[in-house]
Image (cartoon, rainbow, N blue to C red):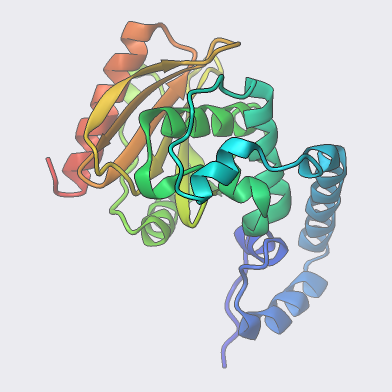
Length: 263
C-alpha cells in the first residue's frame, strides 16, 4: 500500500479524532519524519488543552432550562439572547474539543433541523469573531489550494460549494475551514482586502423556510447578511457599512447558487 502525503489539515483531523484508523500509523510515521510538522502538532495540541482549561467553568454550567424544554418538545418561551461573549466562547470551545463538544456542540447550534435566521446569523458571527482575528491559523486550507478546499467542503456539506469572486470589491479569498454544526457541518470562507479588513461567508445545508435579511451583533460592530433558501443557509459577516455588506451578500448569493446550478 502506497503511503499518501499528509498535510497540516491531517494534523487537525488527528487531533479531532476524525482520521481513519487505517491511516494513523502512516500519519505517526510521517510526523516522525517531519520534525517541523511534529512540533506544530504538539503546539496545536497544547493550545487546545489551554483553551479547554480556560473554558472549563463554562462546561460546568448546568444545561439551560430552555434547552431541556426544547429537547422535550415544548415550545420555547421568548428569552433574552445570551451575551455575545458566550457565543464566541462556545465557538472557541468547539475548536478546542473538536466534533465531540458535548453540551455546547448541541447548544451553540441549537435546532439545526429547523434552522432559524437568528440561529444562523449568531453562529456565523460567533465563528467570524473567533477565526477572523487569527493571523496564522484563521483557515485550515489556504486559497493556494482552492480546488482541494472547495471539493473537501462540498463533500462534507453535501452541497456544491463555490468561492464567490469578490475581487472587484477589493476582497480576495484567504481560504476556508470546516466547522461543527450540531449533527451537521458548516463551512466558512474567509476574505481579506488590502487594508486587512476581513469578510467571512458561513454556509450550512439548511434553508427549508425561505428567509433573508440583516442581523446586527448586540454588542460590537459585526453584521450578518443572511439567507435561507433552496437547501442553503448562508450568512456574510463583516464590519462594512450596511449597504456595502448587502451588496456583497447579494453578489455572493448569486454566484453560489449559479455555481451549484440553481440560479
